[in-house]
Image (cartoon, rainbow over all chains, first blue to last red; front, side, top):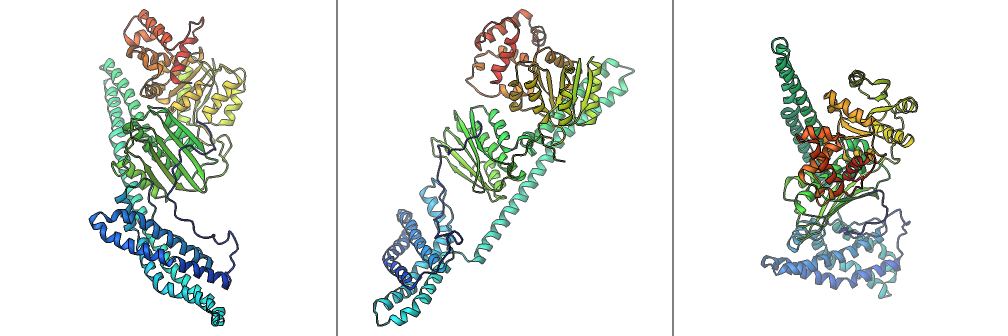
Length: 410
Length: 213
């Protein structure tokens, strides 16, 4: 427990997208000179053969995957094609001075072969890569070759002097157009994501409202009605049967206790008081204390995340821990909470039986929906026989200084 | 007995004052915010405090903090903390603030006036009173703890001890003789490795061992 600022021992790498050439702004970009451009053209030419090879094998693999044998081929050559495409992205970025990001859909750690291929196949960027390969083997090849030849043939030196730059820029634009989404594509994708997450978070909150209404209706409300009836009856019996009246009054008192208990559990389901008091760090510690197995909590949070994020993250961690308690058979579990690079991350790990499937059961899908409203993500690594590691991430800023409750807030 | 009361709901404060005065306590200061509470607790003539967890200005846990702080400055100062909800985490923090003379109850328990006043008197007498809800949450967890070596009956006795009851009261609650209770408590002390002690602190320490402070 307490603050821990070194890296946790268990760290599973993200399948992060390939890093693109120097981000603009980091290093001032200078347009490459003619010789450098020609060098780039040479690089393009050197990559023609591997591109051809990867293209052919990807296509063959794709065709053969109908009979399963193609899957291993795709497993090797889709990443190879991506690698070579990203080399071209970096060259295009260097020539144009703008980043050409590789917007592949992330493949979660430990995804099995068929699922991995499915993710590749559903990613529009895979198909763009394929189309790009065709273009780069034809028109792209011609442009790069032209630049290269204009210099090498010497007599065409004048043409090279004036032509190298426009030709190579044309080549780079061609690559960029195919290898990355344009602004419009990007906005369209964003709109689609926002539409989906908005719809699901509206559904989610409507369902929550209904649940709260039901809980109040069946719980506290019903009990208060009973209190009223007992007291009413007692009132009418005070003179005729004081003993019975007293019994009814004490029944009524017991019923108020029950009603308060119901209200407490409803409140915990909406916004646990300890979360309001202590923030996500304290609230997760409180959760850990109530677990049937020892749970170590490590946290490095220099401030408090925005309340809605805090709440979504809390319920996500609570759900994960509840699953640890219910299904994993673990002896120990741990939670690591930290905020770095504008992302709030919670990792929940256990040494249990593994085999957790986020698609099974409504709890985890609810967690995912709730997090996605904040552009958050959940990754589950849970091989058979364990261990299980769930990584929850939500981009957010922290309110910088830790608010001390004793300081007056006005 | 001179008490300080901190409660931010005027209605509840009024009710509590009525109950406390009827129980023979005198409420010398009734406050609803942390700075005034600090001032009231600084008065050496005050004998004990009844505090709500949430107070002005930020409505988080200033009552709890004040309880821990006053017990740091005046070790053994009796404090009864009341709250709309109870947390195992908070119980641990309160118990860690010194041996005994501490209470942590749900506000609902006040409705059983006699029991509440009794609990408050036990706290002022140096006892420990922990809400059954906290105890239930602890009971429901952690297999393989020393506490699990206890028999069901012993666990029952221990949980009543955590509520601050005397052997006589436990005997009444469980419909057994006081002698039987004494036998159970001795067995509990042995199982939790608590040596014989002249004063009655063993009871408190048994509870603390149980709460893993």
